[in-house]
Image (cartoon, rainbow, N blue to C red; front, side, top):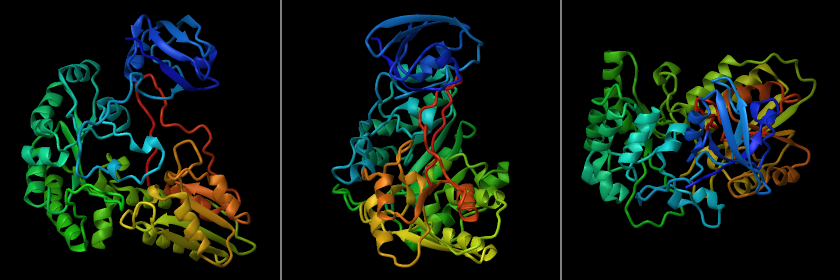
Length: 464
């Protein structure tokens, strides 16, 4: 079967532009090889002599023959990384966040991917329950490593119960197959109070730790529950004492592994520290932040970027009032940083605006899941001067100024014509915005989650 990779964007100074490729063109084959995904394309494009079969928007097909350097990139972006369609999840996990999405939201939010290719390319976590011998063979053939595996627990019966899939019992055998294929992997546990914590978590940690060096890390994140969940399976979120108990239990393993090999290996997501009222660990604890996209060390990384990116600014000549929109979880941290900025500039007035998530439910407290309507309601409820508004960039769709509830940023801006709205994502962004608001602007034009490179590498937006 022949699949097609549709081009979304062509870099103006790259090889694709030189060949005359444009958005809407479809790559059908390279040197006669059909392409299932960008992985196939990447390896096929490693040759120096290329015959590219292209289908243009009018349906006409053309073979473009050219020579290139072995490592020369095509410099195009695709609408999707997988040309034959995303492999969907066949599980019915009791903790699935996609099943808790509010009704009548955009359909893309309800896609359940469980595709090992997206795991390799983007760091998406997969359960491996839909993988067969051909998949492991391809992993070995193309050296697809590392992958990201959603373990949840190593007790096969409990894992099958949580994922509601009989195939989930084979987790140990499938990890064996990954290792036999030469693949390393990061692992994740979504921890549910009273279910896979306690002795079950102890077992999971023990068995994953024993799989080093193929097992590269273990992240433990608390289950999230929205007000839209209607699954009868009982789930409980962690409270202050429960989160503290998890931290204490995991710290024993962390200290042991640090003593053995000088790294932490096991990481807890920021939410555990927030719930327990404890400081997040120092940057050295996170070993270079291998699971940053998974919410592991985001707060500490944000603070580090703030500290090492202090811009030079001129004193303000008049008062400047900025509102900073944020999820409730990180509001105390942002307040602390804002106080630092205000201590250096008497005319700077920063108001942190923690937004309660009415759309998903108040237990959802991260900035990236705030909706435009909740942000609007929170800002309209505040009086006083307002010259600027800072919003969390991850609340916007990648490459577009649209919130999760499909409110456009320009519609929010129209409600506050006297205040400029700017997104920030990193600690460096936040520092620049507060220190030099007059010149700060975060351009998001051309952003995309799909960036093809000759080594099948991808850039992916972080979520904060």
